[in-house]
Length: 191
Image (cartoon, rainbow, N blue to C red; front, top):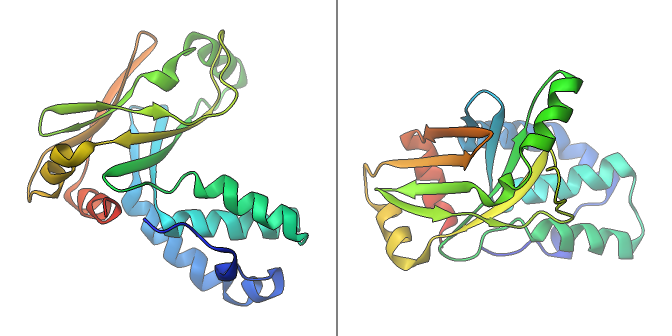
């Protein structure tokens, strides 16, 4: 998948003019790409459009106008774009109560290595892309990649294939079967 380039990034004023329609389109897109993984994890499969939106929103929110800072945001978020035969996801760990969240982030140490994608019975363990992993706790947001390889990517492209995303950690186990529309979205990410 093509990375976002500098010439695609709008200046803040230009972005404000198209922001509402762009946001609506991305919200609709994310609805197809978001999967509840049990009651406390959410998986958002990223693609070029979600990354472009994230870059534009960061520049707007942080009022970033310096060229070196813009280039840094582009470089940082481009890491979320999947390569050929790869899927990319942001995983959110969500516990609304602060005490429970703190306790679970400790109990979930090492969870970044426990995410997987199952395509027709073939499990691909996610590669952790999260920076700053701690030995005694985890973070509330994780960036992962699923390097499927050609055979698994081809299996994903097959109509009606069973696809699930999951986590297998002693403190949290869950699996979610992906809806056919979500699978169709992910197939577009493979090339």
